[in-house]
Image (cartoon, rainbow, N blue to C red; front, top):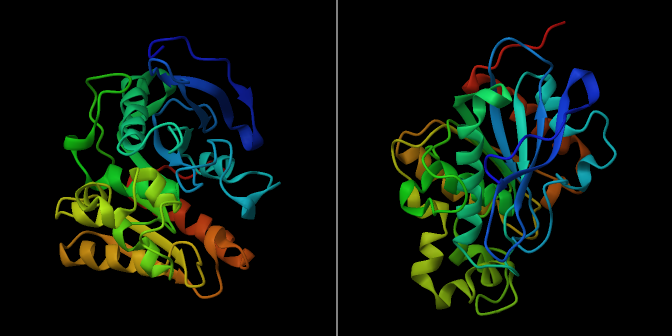
Length: 296
């Protein structure tokens, strides 16, 4: 499956080309891992790439969605990023009802390896790959930037490296043991999203919760980070991004944090936050991946 022919591309907004349902990893006894790929208008140069991980509390969601704030948008956010000269791969990963952590990170790493292995065929630069995610997907993007080879896993293609050159996380959880208390919930509740990811409440499995928390993997060699979060977030407190920002800054990592006063989770309640978050993301990716400007 990792070497299967690519599906035909179909035209999207602004000259963007879209490949849907590309197989990027096989799992015995489980559904195949797939991604959707948005490629910038045809060019003779290799484009940088950002890999997007959807939200849904590790329990719901799919590669087809980026949150309700952008429902019906035309061009959609992925097309906007591709129009700016940056290819986008939106990938699926196993949900917590299918497997517990670290399966989700192993799937994310499999997507990086597959994309890097077939980069030239896709017209993307294997040395300019970033990670971007929202909520649970932001957590995975953060781990891709921080966790290192120890949590790579063996899903899908083997060989290519899984490092990324930049990370964007929207309202992502970075300290799983504190998610419940930050949200004024019961840390022993077995039905929380993080408990279902870990197979038990985080406080009951402290070693696994620590392994699954980006905050515990911070190091001085981390790539640049952009953290965006709403102060009114009821599900993942903005304190999660503030802690990660402080830890990265303490290690002299290039990190930026922006908080939106009126924005709830998924930018609900603040359409301007949704617009600004996407703009900041495109600007950050362009800066750190050195993307060429789109032709006028």
